[in-house]
Amino acid sequence: MRRRLSLRLPSALSRALVFAVLAPVLGVVLCGCFSSPPQIIQLSPVNGSTGVPADAVVRVVFDHGVRRDSVEPLFHVDPAIPGCDLAAAFHPAPSGDCGVSWSADSTAFSLAHTRAPFAPNTRYTFTLSPGVMDGQGVANSLDHHWTVTSGPSPAVDGVTPGDGTTLVPVDAPMVVAFSSAMDVSAATAISLSPAVAGTRVVRNTRDHGRFVILPGHLLDPGVEYTITVDTRATDEHGQRLPKGVTSSFRTGLIGLEGHAVVLARRSGESPSQVVLTALGAQVAGEPAAAATLLEAPICTTVGGCGGVGVGRPVLAYLQAAVSPDGRWLAVASQDLQTPGARPSLELMTLPSLVSRVVAGQGWNVSWSPDGSRLAFDTPTGVHVLGVMSGRDLLLPRGDPLTAPPVWSGDSSVLALPVQNSAGVAHVDLVDPNLDARYAVPGLGGAVSAPALSPDGSMLAVRREGAADVAGTWVIRLRGGDATPRRLAADLTPVAFIDGGTLLAVERPADTDPGLVRVNAASGDRDRLANQPLASDLSSAVMAPSGRQVAYLLPDSAGVRQAVIENVDGSNPVLLTTFAAGAVDAFAVEFSG
Image (tube, rainbow, N blue to C red; front, side, top):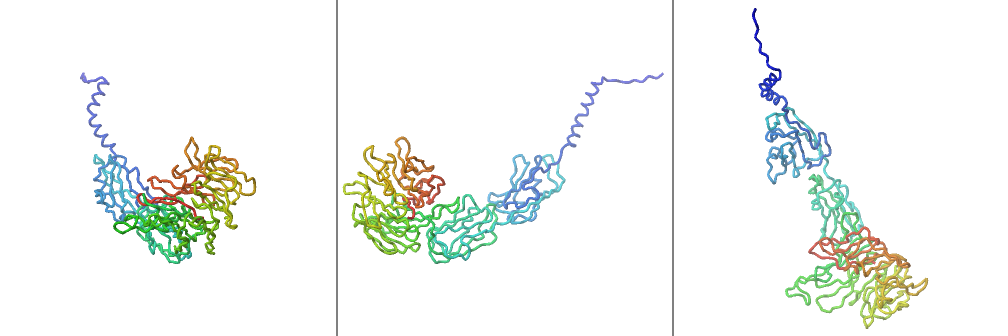
């Protein structure tokens, strides 16, 4: 009988030996079986996108790193992006119009083409052909295609004034509105003809599709002007305006809306410019329309011009006031070439600025609220001139003015801040219709800063003196008890907001000074939310409407600007936007 010989190994040992023999083989097999080709996991813009911005970055993201050199010959776009050489984009020069950049781990690349934007309304097909490999040489065999459609080119939605418009106010802002947000450089594509010196084109800071044209000087009346928008204008994505636009209009006279007048000067000089501004911006996010009315001549003579050095203005504008109807400008100016020269007063028509001398020596100008009369001071006394009639009324003699006269809102009363020969300030009242002048009843001592209520029935003044005397006093001129009443010791009147509310400067002993609204009956006060600096509180002036107040305030660059806000201190807006190193505001006054 034959016997079979068999060798049996313990089962645990058997399995260990088998694994040791097969592990290297299995490792190779498993590695080859489970290594996958690189896959696209994200596209931007996504396939089928429409309205794509012209400078949109094209981005492709893979699930793991790829060999960059395998992508370059396989990436295509049809049609070609104007101005972009796709092959060269993978090796971009710093000044190239388009370029490809990679993520650090080579899992994504981006095509930027800011200087080579998509053509408008164009469907682009991007292709990544088979063959993209990863670091181990495993290739993607799929052919990838995706499409995006670019957005439309920008268009001009409208121009104001519209083509063919007539009788356009010479101080009206001009506007170009686009269909989309535009690059700030589009301002250079907008022009006004005939050209006006100092004209700026400014993009609205909130609405980037709106540009406002701000002439440096008033337009000439009765002249045809043309606004041109040329094809250099591009939107914020580099898309160019395909077609230029023009709009022609003819000017009329100055607008009837309210104005402010700002005197401006260079540092260390007398006021040398008179600027007319609108009462705030037409639309939030852009400057108020402001135009230079007058600019003093400059001394060009080597060695100087009398008392003026070379390069400095030979004339100082001490005061300027526009009539409430916008038809007249009264200007008190001083010849700086003659030391000690007194100011002269001129009356100019607006917008032509045709001038006539009202007084060889005249100053402290104030318009009646109805714009029919002009009060001013001369060495012979205070005059009230009927502008249209030419009737010049010399008020009864009295002490000379120290500041412009103050009219009541109904033009029935005129308050004269004056000073006697001993240097004591006081206030006289005048009824310009009756040719009567009299002292404020019931108040003695030093009195200044008069403010009249709109109907002329109430007067507020600042009185100096002992502790129980100093302060703001209110006197009822008619319709009630005429006994003067002290309102508060720390207040100085600015103007009446309405018949019962006074705008005043508050100078408390324990806090900073500021502007407040004061109830003339109770003395209750409310401080304005926004304030001038303490040093500029004296610059505050009230609008004839009683709804706004203006004052001077340095901007973030330290340039003093004129600011307007509501009488509750809300909505402060710049009236001027003087640039650093040029001029800054010296005084602000409302028309009327």
